[in-house]
Length: 298
Ligand code: GLU
Image (cartoon, rainbow, N blue to C red):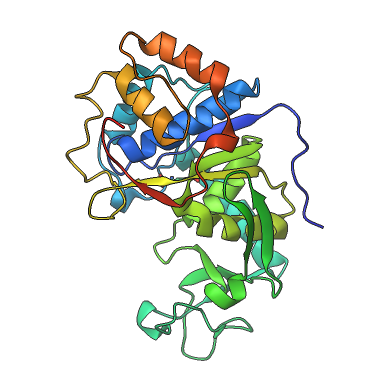
């Protein structure tokens, strides 16, 4: 049986990748995870997910930490840099390989079917002529089920949607899915609050927790902000006013986006807005939607 975290003291986290600066979309996850941890009397941790050097933007990790501080968001423990955890990621990989729960795959991208579902070509050993490229996790035949604290019941079959997925990359780096599961467990995270664009990843992460015998945190996925064109706000959306807008008013916008009826009268400064947030936050008010178009000033 899967093991869920008991409802004891909450430890939440925000885990940005340093692939660009903080933007409104990532601020939402920071605010939601922080407020949820704090109203539960818990801790909030910041983890910089710097395990993808090719995508890293120099200086962005430091700028994310500094920008979060402008909003009063400080990690309750020293910031964890995921790049310091590669040995633990490798150990988890080895455990899965040793237990026959993962395997080396020699298929190149061009050999994968258009469906995106890995057909299991290398599941029973590397076919002759193929060399080790990536490591894949064997996914269970039965669907993964969990209750998301915002989105409700989720049931998804990994076998029918992705098949055995990559947990160790061809460039010798851990895949995000493996690293995030190992480090959420290491930091004893009990509740993961983040954008709904990661809902599909959660299904993979729960499968990995089960394979590794780790506890499954509670999950809450808030709607993501999309632009007028329907596309996710991204770090490259340069119109993002994170530094141009006073933190108090951007925090109020974030809270309202997250369904919290933060008053819009002028006069609430940053401290006052946080007091309001901590007195009034309710996860049950976060809209049960995957995405919402952003109207600044809402
Ligand atoms: N590092 C991931 C990102 O910035 C998010 C990780 C997570 O919240 O699990 O998209």
